[in-house]
Structure formats: C-alpha cells, structure tokens
Image 1 (spheres, rainbow, N blue to C red):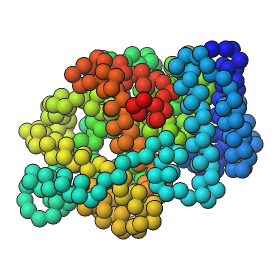
Image 2 (cartoon, helix red, strand yellow; image 1 turned 180 degrees about the vertical axis):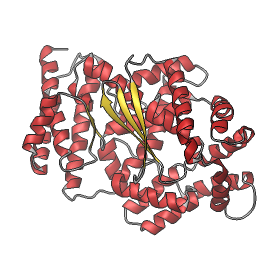
Image 3 (cartoon, helix red, strand yellow; image 1 turned 90 degrees about the vertical axis):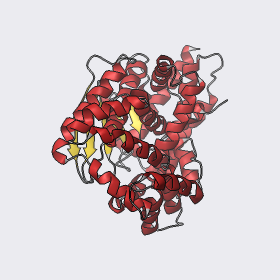
Image 4 (cartoon, one colour; image 1 turned 90 degrees about the horizontal axis):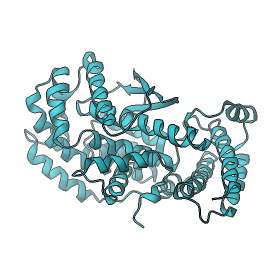
Length: 415
C-alpha cells in the first residue's frame, strides 16, 4: 500500500463529501447525516453547483478511481476504493433522477443500492395467508381478522414512553454484552407526527443520535423492540457510532462523515438494523422479555405473548409483499388505490397504514428493498462466516466487524 494511493483516496473522498452535500441542495432527503469538517459544508453551501456540474465532477472522480493502482493493498483499503466508486455511481444515478430520468424499480434499486430484490408471485403470499387463516380466531377475510386480533395489542399513547424506554434500555444492555460502545454515546428520543415512516435515527456525530417515533398511527407492542433495536441498539445508532470511531476518527476517512441516503450504504445500514433485532432478542428470549416487562408496562396480559408471536412470525413472512406493491406501483402497473388494496390483502396493512406506506413509496421509491433484502443478505453473510444462532459470540463478532467496515451490498454475496 503506497502513500500515493492513500493521498489520492483522501483527496477524492473530500471531493465526494462536497458532492454529496451539494446534492443535498437539490434533494432535501439526500443527506441523512453529516458531522465532518465544517469547511466542506461551507464550500458546498457557498457554491451550490448545478446538477449537471455535480454529475460532471462525479464522472471525473470515477475516472480517477479507475486509474489508481490498488495492487497489494490491505482488504479494508480495497473495500474503501470500491466503496467510493459505487457510492459515486449511485450519486450520479440520483442526480439523473433529480433531472427527470425515470428507471424501472429493479433498475433503480441496482443503480442506487447495489442490489435487486427477488420477485414473489401472489401464490407465495396466499400460501402464508392460508396458514394465518388457521391460526387467527374467528371467521371471514384474513386481513380483517388480523386487524381485529391486533387491536388489543396497541400500546396506549400514555404508555408509549415507558414501554419504549424499557425496550431501548434492554436493547442497549444486551448490545453492550458483545460490542464495546463509545463511553459518551447517547440519544434523545422524540415522538413526532406527520411522517411517512414509523421511526427514524438522525445521527448527530460524537456518538449521539436523535431517535424519532411517529405516532400518527397506532403502535403495536412488537414495534417497541423492533424500533428500539433497529433505530438504536445494535442498529443505526451503533452502526454510525462504530463507523465514526473506526473509520472517521481512527483512519481519518472523511467520506464516512457524510451519509447519502439513496446509496448502497443504506442497504448495509437498514439490513444490519433489521438483523440486529434478532441479534439482541433471539427467539424465545424476546417473548420472555416482552411477556414479563413490556406487556405489563403497556397494560396487556403477558400470558398472550406466546400466541401473539406465533401469529406475528407468520405475518413477518409476508414482508416482501410490500416490495411487490412498490415495484408494481412505481412501474406504473397499478395506481395508488391498487397499491393500497395489495398492501391490505397481501401485507395485512390496515387501510390507513397502507395509505401511509404509499406516501413512503412516493418519497423513497425503491428504498424499500433495503429493509427485507438487506436483512436477508446480512444474515446470510454473517452465517456464512460462522456467525450462527448457536454460536452467539461469533455471530456478534461478525456483526460488529460488518458494522465498522466499508463493505458494499455486492460484497455480501457469495464469491
């Protein structure tokens, strides 16, 4: 590894950060986090280059990256080189989209996120719905019965904070068994309305986050552990804190001080955050914790937890139905009402939640693949390296290494 290569990558990385921040002037959602050198933001803010100028500069950086010699460098530097290439290619795609280019769902996800989600036929979801039909009480259409069943598991609004605080505290405690967190890490929890998402982590740098929970729609008991782990521990908050510690501060790799939302990094971020739920609360451990801690705090009967999670486990197998709705809707094969009907019938969303989800499709488009496909790819990658449920220490070790690395989604696939 030569000093010349490092200097080239450092210089290109600074230019990449300026370009990401510049795209943010054209797309309010693009810059999810920035805690890097203030002068880079000041320069991007002062110039505010056009989309065509941003694309031209990104193309120049890509030419430079393809010219540099990486022979004999260590793996993490090779990953850094590949990361910068793929992030810049993704940035060019997003710039073109902002300029009016429209891609089909799978083309867009490949270009932005370095991955394409599998396609499932309606028969796949019907088979799962048939199994749910046998478990749910009552008779009639499964979507209505599922909604009726879940109603008694809505967290009362006056109990939301104690339930979420307990879930976050336990998720943090379990994560700290296996991952050394920065001593000053912390977060602020807020409850908000008027959003197209259910939860969000806004990373502020210095190991601090703002975690927001959207209370527009009823929040079910399972969402407490899901959001505590996904947005907090060992999800987004831990992911960003480890990147900051190991890549930004220890290696001075400035490109990791900015997070471009519509980029391959998001599949790693969302995939590890979703996989982290099962990492922190594996199997029956989750049921036991909720039964003894969260259900009582929510004023629910803990004896119903086992049945609830038997049904919930089947419901989770429908999660690719949301991808199918987004794919068909964004490809113009169905309209908004058709997407709502699909989500109600095959994803078991309430009509209100389905309407909210279509707003997410409008705002974030093919981003939806990052949650379920990301989780699956992360899980397969960690398990292929020996991180099995039966070997939790190894599982956490591989998970931690992934969180603190510049690995791309395509790097999760078998060689």
